Amino acid sequence: MTSDPRKIRSAWALLSPTWIVLGVFLLAPLALMLLVSFAERGTYGGVAPVPDLAGHVGSGAFLDNYIRSFRGIYLGIAWRSLWMAVVTTALCLVVSYPAAYWLARLAPRRWKGLLLGLVVVPFWTSFLIRTYAWMFLLRTEGLLNLALTGFGLHPVELLYTQTAVLIGLVYGELPFMILPLYASLEKLDPTLLEAASDLGAGRMGTFWRVTVPLTAPGIAAGTVLVFIPSLGQFVVSDLLGGARSMLLGNLVQNQFAVARNPPFGSALAFELTAAVLVLLFAYAVFARRRGEEILP
Image (cartoon, helix red, strand yellow):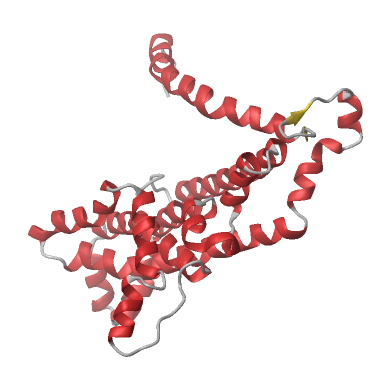
């Protein structure tokens, strides 16, 4: 670490635009959202003025919105969001690991660029449009049910179910799991696999004792990149799940757009943001303890 004042001033000059942007567009809105979350809803919506600030704080009323978020239906929505994010992450990992392994270790070198391009092709189209496409696939008269009836099978009700939400979430987040896993598998030293084989380990033993531990940073990165967006998702659940599959993202949106209750919506949003920051901090600690980069 340098102690040269000129180098320190140069470093601060280079970092200052980043800190200004983060302060204006991240920290300031978070601080405003935190302050609003301590307020109360007005009679006709919005934020009600607090005539007695000391009494409001002393009575503990400023925490009412946070206490309310852990009660009744809101706790059920939070639990549903959590377990669907966990299931989405697990499904993405199960599907992505074989695909990433094949791309990194088995695919012909001349085709790798094209195959990786196909992984990111969905990003070239709006996520909203891709979600609407799934509505045409999963609805009662959709392509999936037309194919089932063509084979003499009964159509199934998929649209506006939690299954449809899971399908949409896994589809949308799959590239975010494949790419970190591919990066970790691509850096894997093949001589370590050969050494494990020479020492008598079978294919499954080599995979579980060598490949998986060495690609743990990619697994952790993919888990974070999939779990966090899934936890706050609202487009997929709104279009594919309907009112019966409301998640935290939909609840936050409804508080601002429909219920006109910014204090409660801000409390929910701040809790979600705090959970995301805790996950990111945990991942950073994990990466540093392993001596790895934050992203592989």
